Image (cartoon, rainbow, N blue to C red):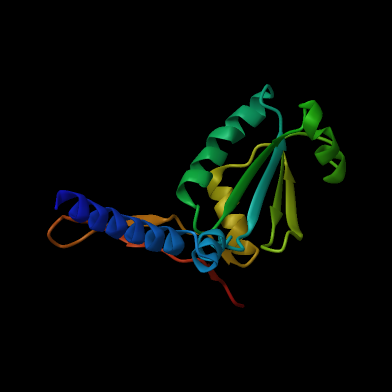
Length: 161
């Protein structure tokens, strides 16, 4: 009697296994797993071309880190070390003559403005506004009447004249 019950249970287990495997490895599930796309937001970009051993560039690195950490939803920030062999071509493409050089680009990659030398964080934000972009921190803490902090997410809005 146990032999028959064991056979039935084994057949039942095999059927469940086959069904499970057919669902997991079906063409539809495979396509769904591989069709997850990462959507990259089109954001304006600040490119800083400098060198990690250059003193003014090191001061800029602090500002770039702050911008990159605080403005991820409204601004992309990139640093290219033009003294590294693998980046020499980038320096030629961007026609860099002095470092640090900051290039402000629109979301499509078109150069809007360039600055040579050190530039402060507030001046960078002001320049983006002058160029027609609202560059906001990802979250802003506001005090309410009962002194509790509220975190308010900000969005990317382009200013219109």
